[in-house]
Length: 450
Ligand code: GLA
Image 1 (cartoon, rainbow, N blue to C red):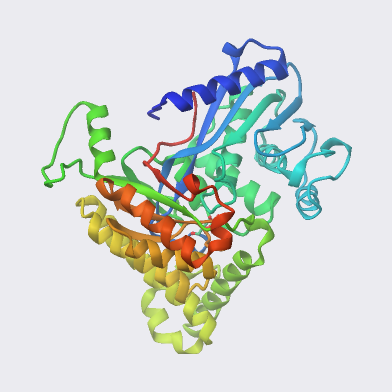
Image 2: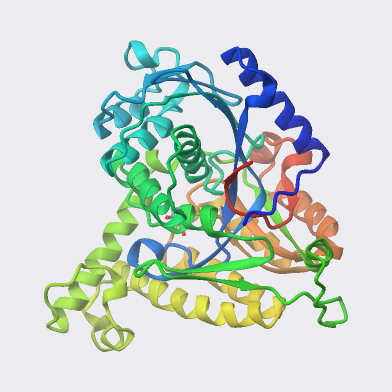
């Protein structure tokens, strides 16, 4: 059950979205439903979800808000707080993947129904309809909606795309009285991203968004889709364990244990327009294919989770240098995830953090997914006061780095990072609002309709 903690600014935002939707639809603001869909972070388990590895994830207290009312017919009408143009289509129109890529490639001005739609932002809503239709849900009810994300956090590697996809799925399902489980929605969001948008990513992002609960690390086996939630022991600074029946008290104690830093590089690019992600996935599959062949195993999908670690050790000499690095990332990251879960479960944030930084290093050296500004940001964060560990957020081709930091030293760490990054990347740093270059966040909850 989602715990919805709404602070004052959030409350104001929600009310302004309610008013906006009321004006668009002619309904009363009280009838407006709200989907909250948080951004996610992946402390350990980067880039192994698409290979069926085990990942860890949690959400943060920032994300997407979608206000909507069911429309009186099949019509969908959407506006965005970030992007220009209106999105209009019908839920009974057939949605086909080809239309999405055309919108992406030419900046969103496609055909009459998407005229004026900046950079194809409506594709996620169409993709949600595609996924629902593909799994046999025939929708009758459209929505009138207004969507907005936390300012400056889109395309930053916090998985705004999955948060948006999940938000639309929940809204269409709510408007059509469909009862869909989180596991089904994980699959529906996979259809949006893999099939409708053409990104060959795994299920990490939407699993985190749909399954997380406050104060827990979600651990997901991306092959079997089994997941567990591991609670951080609620303890005081002196490591005294507290077990209070008062949920709010527990949450407040956890907030005092650690904070999450989001440090922005100033680089932004959508993953769907960067070839690096899909080419790394293809390299992992090539490595798996060679290892499976070398060990005489036939008939299995060429993904690295189908290769036993012993088989990798025995046959890794058959891989060229690049494929060897990709496979090394996979096998070492899986081990780090398992160790990290133990550290988290025992409340050892220092060890947990060291593993995150080691994972960051493997992303740089083995997965080769960073770029100079992001690597500099990672190196600065690792040295920042009070930081337990840091790494790129998400795919690491653009966007931001995350760090787990001692709550008492979060401000100090943020100002250190801001200062040092401005020294090494003055131009990029000048493009980011100084107050927003490093944000201090808390963990969050799962996506829900409130
Ligand atoms: C992106 C993808 C995920 C995952 C991460 C890297 O966020 O969407 O599936 O691969 O990168 O861990």
